[in-house]
Length: 389
Ligand code: APR
Ligand code: PHB
Image (cartoon, rainbow, N blue to C red; front, side, top):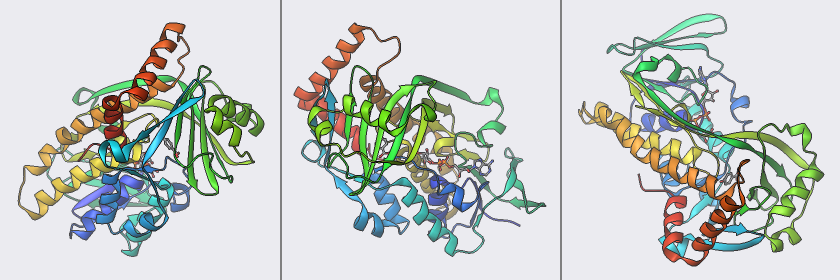
C-alpha cells in the first residue's frame, strides 16, 4: 500500500493532523497501537486556547465546543488562603474555553472514522523504516498479518513513550529534561464546581487546583509526594487536604462527594531537538512534555500540528519543497516559550521538598507582585491564553 503521509499514533495530535491533511486532499493513514476505547479512556486537562479552538474549527469540529464549552475570562490565584483574579479579557482581550480533552479526541475520532480505513487501530510493532531516504515506509502487524505502507513522510504523533523518537540515533538529537520532585493527584467528582473559574492555589503544605468539566462535574488536583500511591488517598483524605489548601471562601462552599476517577501523575518538562530526522517528524508529546500547571499539553501539541500542516501543504500543494525544513525550528521556538511558562507556573505555585522559609517568602512575594502589578498580570494572561502561532 502507498500513501502520502503515515501518522504513527492516534491521540489528539495524530487525529487532528490527519483530518486537516485530508480536508486539503493530502492522503494519509493513522496507525494507532491501542483500541479506540482505550484511547478515549484517558482523562487529560480541559482548557483550550483560542488558537486551539480555531484549529479545531478548521477541522470542522467547532460546533460542539461552541455549544458545550465554557468561556472563561480569567482565573484565580491563591496564596495563604486568599485569592485574587487575573482578568484575561480586560488584560489581553482574549479568553480560554473549558472543554474536556477526551471530548476533543472523541469528536476527532468520529470525523476521521467517516473516511473508512484512514485509521487503523490495534496496529502492533509499528516501525518506521528508511527515514533517511526519499522512499520511507512503515511496517506493522495487524491480526497476526505483516503489513507495509510506503509514503513520502512519516509523522511521530505517538506520545512520550512512542517508538518514533526512540529510533532516532542518540547522537542526532539532544534532549532537555526536568523532573519535578512531586506528583498531582486528580479526582473527578459529580459535584457542582466550587468556583465559576479555575483556582490555582499556592499553600505552604502544597499546591491545589480547582477545575471543572461541566456544571455537575468537578475536577480537582492536589500536589502529593512523588512516592505516594492512589491507594494512600481515600476520598476523605483528599477532600480534607484540598479544603486546607484552597482560598478560605472557596473551602467554605466546597461540595464534596464520591470520586468517580482518581489518578496520580508525575510532573516533567522535556524537549527533544530537532523535531525532525530525515523524513520523520515529531509532533506533540512525542517531542515534548510540560507539567500540567497552565494546561499547555494539548495546546502545545496542536501548535505543532499547525506548523507541520502548513509545511506539508507548502510541500504538496504549493510546490515549496523547502517548507518542511522549517517545521522544527518554527515549532521549537514556540515550544520553549511554553516550556518556560509552565515551568514558571510550577515553580511559583508548588512546595518543593527542600523548600526553605526563604523560598516560600519569595513565592509569596512573586504572587503579591502579580496581585498588584497590571504589567505582571498581562504577561501571565498573554501566556495562559496562548501565544500566537
Ligand atoms: N505505535 C502506534 N501508536 C502508538 C505507539 C506505537 N508504537 N506508541 C504510542 N502510540 C499511540 C498511543 O496509544 C496514543 O494513542 O500514540 C498516541 C499518542 O497520544 P498522546 O500520548 O495523547 O499524545 P499526543 O496526541 O501528542 O497528545 C498531546 O494530548 O494526550 C494529551 O498528554 C497529552 O496533552 C498531551 C496532548
Ligand atoms: C483540568 O481541568 O484537568 C486542568 C485544568 C487546568 C490545568 C490542568 C488541568 O492547569
